[in-house]
Length: 312
Image 1 (cartoon, helix red, strand yellow):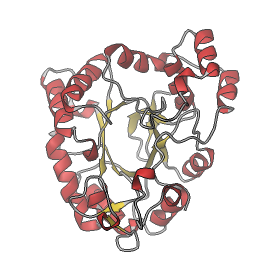
Image 2 (tube, rainbow, N blue to C red; image 1 turned 45 degrees about the vertical axis):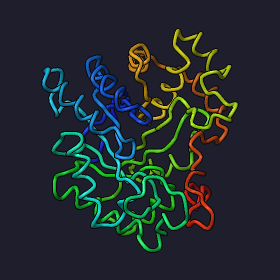
Image 3 (tube, rainbow, N blue to C red; image 1 turned 120 degrees about the vertical axis):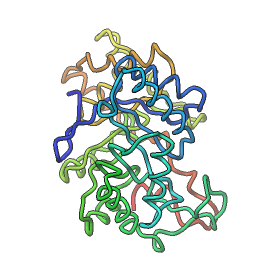
Image 4 (spheres, one colour; image 1 turned 90 degrees about the vertical axis):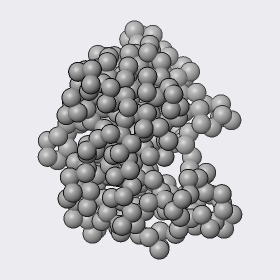
C-alpha cells in the first residue's frame, strides 16, 4: 500500500514529510531534498511558522522541473485563532499565499480548541474562546466553503476524538475525510481508528516515531527492545519498523526529518513488509502513551483540559 484513497478516488501518498519543528532556515532544504529523492506528500501548518520557506522550496522544485504542482499532495491546517465560519477562508488564503499555491489538497482544523484572534499560544484563560461560543459545526461550515471556492480539494480535522467527529458529522453537508492524530506502536488508538474506518474517515499519524517534546519521559519508541529485535531480523532500522507497522494498519505517516540519510531511510520503508507475527508482537506494545499530551491547553480557570480534548 503506497497511497490512501479518498471518496472521489483521489490518492494521497501514505508516507509524507512532516514539517513540525523544522526551523525556517532548515525546512527549505529539507523539503527541496525530500522532493528530489521522491517524496510527493508534504504536511504543513500555519502554526509551524515555516510555510513561507516550504512554499519557496515547492516553487523551486517546480521551477527545476522536479515535479509539477499536480504531482504533489500538500496538507495544511487552520490555526486555533481562526475558528468560526467567517475566519476560515481568510486564514486559508494566507496559507496559500505563504505556500505560493492556488489550492491545497487537504485542509484540516488543527485542534478542537478555539483561541482569540492574534493568540499564538495561550497564557491565560481569557486567551481562549469556549466551544460553546464558537461551535465546531460553525467552523466546519467555513471548511466546507473552501471546497466550494476550490481553495481545498479535501477537508478534515486533526486531534479530534469520536464525539467531536460525531458533532460535526451530525450537520455536515460534506463529511470529514481525514483525522490526523498522534499514532505509533505505543499509542495505537484502536477505538478511534475503528470509528474512523466505519465512517470512511482516513487517518494520518503524526509523531509516528514518537517525539521528544516531553523531555522528561523515559519512553523512547525507537529504543524499544521488541522493535529493535524485529528491525535486526528484517534488516530494517527501528524507525522503519515503527513506520511500517502504522502503514500496514492502513494509516498514513508523516515523519519529520531534515537529515538526508533519515529522509531516504524513512522513504525506503515502503520497500519493506512486516510479517503477521511482527504485527502481532508490535500490537502488544500499546501503552496508550501520548508524547503530545495536550496539557499545554490547560491554564487556570481555562475552558479546556487535556482530558476534555481526548475523551469528552
